Length: 627
Image (cartoon, rainbow, N blue to C red; front, side):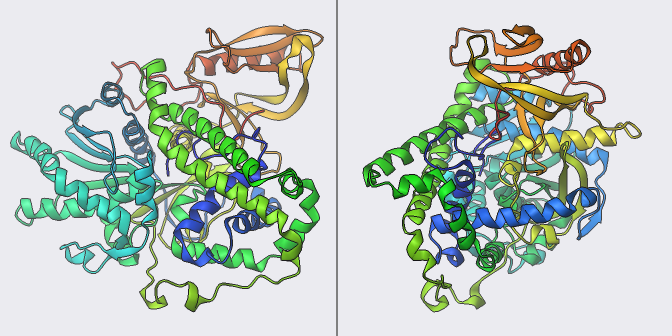
């Protein structure tokens, strides 16, 4: 679930195998098809294309109402998010982010920025035993137990074991509660082996007459496992403390549906789940997949597809007589390799702690297996889409029928259990400026969680990059009341699409509406379809330098952003400011600030230890490429 920083986004848009939209939803469709019985009546290709047309329908509806509704509370809102909570989540998110590091020294450096030291760490996962670490801070009286999200094939298999089974907790409030089987087994396995280490760490504080803050943390798979582990630890601590109610917290980022309704309500006293806007994973429950399948069946997507069929180069390739099974497989492998490389680069920006190139390589290695899993699913989806195109004429002559429940269902309806996002849920929402503009506390059964939202950000919203942006933006607003949150600089830029502008290899393209927010280190521009997810280029901490540059035939108001290194493959971004000298000076200053890793004003408060140098972030051109 964590194909890292700007993670699980799209396969390379330059892949010649499937259109970008099909690759993104192909990944989601493949995962849903593998894990949920209700969609088995559709092939992966059917599901991919059906989801795409359903997204188009939803997008048209949003265009009509979104601007007027963006600042309105969502149905199901039941409380406000306070600035102290947001700043605490930002600090805890640093620990969660660090769990994806595979080098112990780099993990130690990352934790040092929040005043923590490693007590124990297992940085390699096995099936139903995710990687984790235990850290402590004597100065802050804190103990963290942090469980990593999906970063290997073994983790992906744990994700896929999504049937509900008994939690088996002795706590009365959790009696009879059902939980996600893979995550429950992971929680039990981790505690059976390592609970003594965790409890000993807590007891060492108590021996010093201190009452530590004990927090269980995680992201994605790690969040669901952490939620369940916190209940089981609560049970063990209560027994160890002679029946006293233990002080234990759980803060889970991008928590999947992992507990039934009773468990969700019972966990509200100690568990906080953080949700970023349309995050698809927190909505990927059995009941929501059933709803998605019904919504796809209700729209006439096959007729729409027939009108668009000649526009898709995938269809053209599938119809061509020269396309053999071997060539399709070769294309799939190429798409998979491209996706894997993208995912590895994105993982690098998730690993925030220092270490330079060494850290980037370590993060890339951690992402490799997960990227391969996602790539295989995406390639499978693309192949399914091509097959769909090849048989399209026969599909139109037959009415698709729903699968026979008696033949397809592996369980009786009476045995099916609805799972939800547990605990007290903090929902951070987007505006056109970015994630985190609005936030509220919602219930597990809030309408926004009761369906899979098909939007341009639903995959990106699962990444820690977007969670960090949401928390930073909201904190910035709450700590600067009365200050208008507006772009530091905005306007039309021209972007060079090509290799060498001085030699005419490529062309300049106008990009209206570009902007840089003062609290961020990235360059954004609006989505062309009017969706809330902007196209974003991360600039901070990647060793990039911005300088004034006069491009041949354009004039003096150019900006070139590049890495000063011997790497011939390093990305170079070429911009031109058509507004003249004054506008050029504003853009150059803002871009140089971002490249230097310096926040503007207003900015959120610093939540790291002041005496420790903050680690640099890696440079990544995100999945929604700025180009």
